[in-house]
Length: 144
Length: 144
Image 1: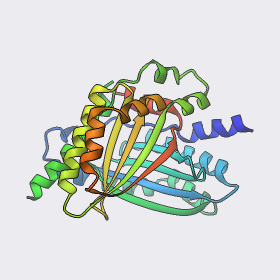
Image 2: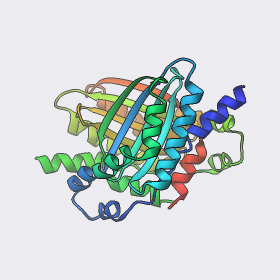
Image 3: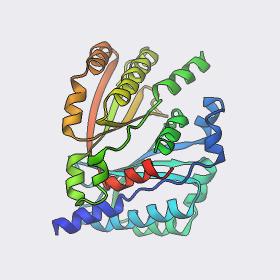
């Protein structure tokens, strides 16, 4: 059971990153403020209802992988589980721009996830951040 | 002034990543639980006192870049600024293991940063997370 849970945790957090597109690469030479305005970097804070953690992780895994696989504008989805509150998940999400994010909200896989997990999610807080220094992301993407 | 502030934001967030070392690469073939135990992934939540933001960002930039440049065990430092609370900074930190983190706390650049910013920091919360699916980090590191 413990192993299954660990595997579920591993599965849901199979984050991936899409290749930075032209707009993102341009950030290396553009004024920082323009890149900050283009890129959307957010931390989603999710509290899962007792008894639904494994189901939620499975649904999140499904939508996360489908999003990065099929949507060029979904650059990165990186989930973490808060140690002291196992039912609290934080996901760092990076979208190419507001347009890519709005498009993501209309996809069938996102709508299916949203509807299918409404009863599992106790609370959801979306913390928008300034996507500071996009070139630092390119460093992460390119360094290896 | 606005441009200076933007440049400061850009500077402080010049995050970098060290090359995943052997221990991290092993995660691809090791049992997930072992990797979860080894890797240390944390979100630091920092509230900066009014009037000290630029000074704090400069100090954070200095310690951040020195840490990833000189400490192989400091894998990644990625700061973000909360849009609705500009004085709130969140930093995703990834260390190779507990030993690397403890070593980081003893470095001169960290101690200098810690002492030099005590009066600038209104509050500090360290949120330890389960470093879910280390192979997802390798994806981020290797994909490009």
